[in-house]
Image 1 (tube, rainbow, N blue to C red):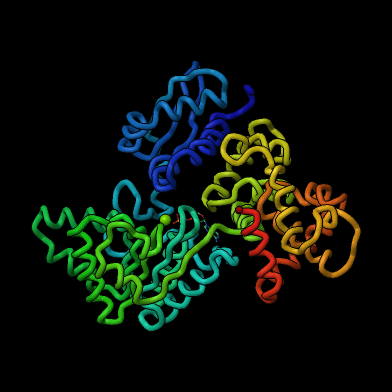
Image 2: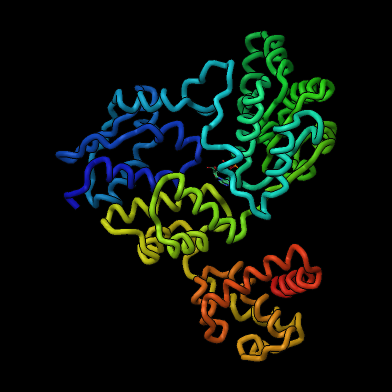
Length: 443
Ligand code: ADP
Ligand code: MG
């Protein structure tokens, strides 16, 4: 243990902290910190400025100390120290809207990583991605507004920034704002009696990108102000892109006239990614970070973390930090241990029997037919469909699925999953069977 540098220990701690707090919080307070020294039971953390030092000291000390104890197995007094090296990386990177000190209001700084190129497309987000690309390339004409909704960590902000990059490249005047910031600015404008300026700012742009609109729901005056901004931009054919955690019709408190505006254009949802997309995202992130992680480790992460792309990224950090700590390459075993307390633990092996039964019922076969050797077309299809569903629903490796399916090998499972996945977009019979099996499963 003594061989670890303070920076290595701190990186391991950051890996843990990142999955416990929100991304904006993490970015704002932790991203530019460093482990400077660890001596005499004092752990010194370098931070970019006193503001961050004070905040961490007041609000995050216990989380930090607890995390460090978990890693070093001994208590240490944490000291925050302003460090110029942290400042350099802070300014050179260019900060985003959730920065501590807000950047000059003129040009929005989009996150350099959130581009269309780095966005992995799968069935779960295809429509949203295509629509975003469409409005970025021909703003104001196709879908106005474009309303993208989906659960947390599924890439809404990423797409919004990607639209922003593309529009800026085309020299459009783009304004990106979170609904929260919009609200805060509006409240300040009222207090300082310069709503004129506020209005002018928002109504003079070619494109307005507004993130997390659900935030304004129920805030009547802000809704009203947004309503007028919306109308003015829309009348002038200026593009509006909105993200939200729910569909317009499911937003509880929103005013009816605003809701109907949201429904004027195109509404695109983003669903949690399927396993192939999760794997593709992991591969992209690993390449981006220039890490080397074995395919079976990525496979394990993709099986364990299912609902949220942000957590997928957190899982990579956690797995690599843990492997560094114990000074080994990540293996499926160490990865499983690293992920144990954040994601679904035991494989959902107990779902296998119900899935087999559901599929067998749907095809009017017996479960044992699926595990056996019959080769007629229907049985073969049912068997493939069962493998596909088990892969979707259970946290099991390909080899384990093959084992469960009557001792088949993993290439058979891969083939089955690919085939069903392809058939699902082209073959109505397979679509019906998958849906029917899923319905039986949920009864
Ligand atoms: P949301 O705004 O929906 O909560 P974000 O856009 O912040 O989610 O995405 C969370 C993280 O996941 C970001 O780092 C983002 O780059 C990444 N991400 C989400 N979807 C994808 C995707 N399809 N391809 C690549 N990265 C993605
Ligand atoms: Mg977001």
